[in-house]
Image 1: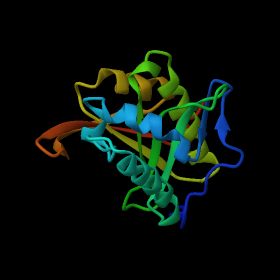
Image 2: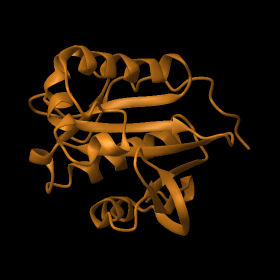
Image 3: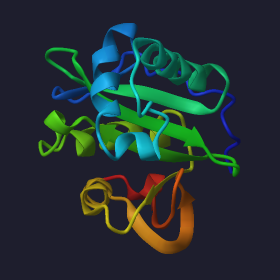
Length: 187
């Protein structure tokens, strides 16, 4: 069984499929963070500030850089491959078990409905399982989040179970479906 990598390094060159590019966050991506902070759901399930200030937005970007530096995982901006404009995030966070990372992702509202999340998840999951190399990528999704379930299923993730009252938010708890992708699932 592979050991946990000490760190996940930024893919070099950045991952791309010609439509999306996954790259290191830049201070110039502050507008994406501001837009995400206005979404009613993104701040609840992530560390994106719910009340945006430039200082808080820049601090959020610095925390994303820190995920790689301190061995927590890796946070990448989902950018338009043509314009390099940041549209969202995809994050791999190590789990306690060696060789396993949890994936999370979000897109700002204007970027939704174009399969960009599916493209980003496919790119980073394949990279994580082949080049990183991790043994397993997991995802936790609220049962009501049909769009996120479709993203995962379109990439080949398998739903494994229902975790009751598993997710913890500031003001509520929620059930979660757990999904996984293994190297043998890649097509």
